Amino acid sequence: MKYIIVTGGVLSGLGKGITTSSIGRNLQSRGLSVTAIKIDPYLNVDAGTMNPFQHGEVFVLEDGGEVDLDLGNYERFLDVRLSRDHNITTGKAYLAAIEKERHGDYLGSTVQIIPHVTDEIKRMIREAAESAGVDVTLVEIGGTVGDIESMPFLEAMRQLSIDEGKENCVFVHTTLVPILPVVGEPKTKPTQHSVRELRAAGIHPSAIVARAPVELDDDVKQKISLFCDVPVEGIVSAPDAGNIYEVPMILEQQGLTDYLLKQMALEGTSQDLGGWKAFVERLRNPEGEVEIALVGKYTHLQDSYISHLEAFQHAGAKANARVNIRWVESVDLEEDGVGLLEGTQGILVPGGFGERGIEGKIRAIRYAREQGIPFQGVCLGFQLATIEFSRSVLGLEGANSSEFDPETPYPVVDLLPEQQGVEDMGATMRLGAHEVVIEEGSKAHELYGSTSIYERHRHRYEINPSFLSKLEGAGLRYVARSEDGRRMDILELEGHPYFLASQFHPEFTSRPLRPSPIHYGLVQAALATQA
Ligand code: GLN
Image 1 (cartoon, rainbow, N blue to C red):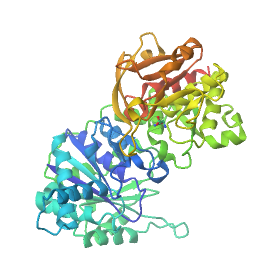
Image 2 (cartoon, helix red, strand yellow):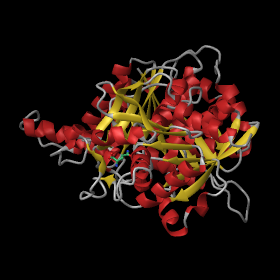
Image 3 (cartoon, protein in one colour):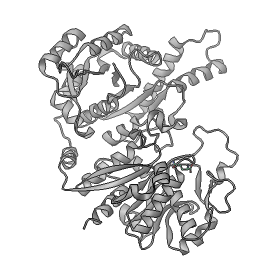
Image 4 (cartoon, rainbow, N blue to C red):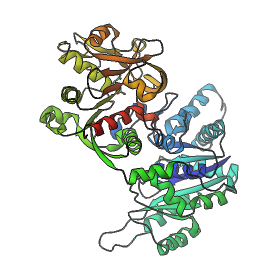
């Protein structure tokens, strides 16, 4: 097994995840099989209990793992399906060591971070890598070199490179090369410092990916090479890209793939990017343009909705149109009214938890329904579409979800039966891929081209089946259900240009060359409003 370990320096948010994904994508285009693992140095066992404002969206895997959003990037770039053991957190590593200690596995020893926790980290990485059975495993270490939190992970990686041999463990360090407005000159000092920090941890990088607003010239690369003791071929400039999907090409052009292959004593075939290049080309120069309003409650951190944004890129490329997002904070709709939505060509109400902003989202849905504006609802958006319809069309005043109003006279959205009595909040929702059976003749069937699909879920509440006949009688049709027929999965409104919502999250399985059918349907319907 070959490992490429990606670390980050200077500051967070440099796009380490995109660098990792792009390196993997490039190795694939040379005929190698790859997988990726994300290390998150926080004490949460998984990302499921975190507010999106903290770390952005919680990504859901097929096996129900609630993980860091970087796993979404890996899945999109590498077109693979990962499992929950590809996200290792401090919490997971310590929990494993402490469980062993309680079980008596270390009987007689003092249990310590080194070697017991570092052993657990290495074991988890090896197990995930081996069960994937690939040529190369990428390991991205979250956080920034020098943080107390990441130290046990860096130490584990140092050990791994000794255990596995240097040519089997290659380190890539991503850093920032800032350009100060006054001098206008790229500054390499922060990179020098962060490489020094990395070397203090016993790790010598083979390559440095230097992020900067612009492309760095050879002089700057030479300087970094000299001061950081990395061959100049290993210094790669990663300027701000117009689009993240261009990054594989940017890295490839500078010879990074060949350089890494050489470091690992691997041979690759000649490059075959498949449809990727054409996809990037369509993203760059689309014919049309359309605007979708995203009505959310975490809109101040766009990473909270990253999989939707990517799904719209994928859908836009297929529909040959640029999809612009209008960010609408749902609470503002409550105060300022639906004027904020005026002129938009499509509306997305995504998933969410808790009461804040609910009434604003309901207003947006009503506006879409009454004005005939293409609408997509996801998870909470699906539940709220049912609530809105129950209130406005069925006249069930006070209809609600028991999540927001336990006393509602009409609990049209109610707790899943198996959730009764569940007290723990971590990993206890209905999670992961479940079969969804779609009725023939529905819009959903036309979009998916199949009567049986697998999509990823993450919810505690569901449509209350006792209101079903009333809802359907008035034109809100539930055209897809779980395989036992009990749970509602997709709704469509009769006589509306596009009003489609799903209990599952189609954004998690959207891929550059295979967009989410429901997002694609929304983009198409939105484009049709221009005709
Ligand atoms: N809060 C809702 C539930 O638990 C919706 C969840 C979501 O949108 N992911 O069912």
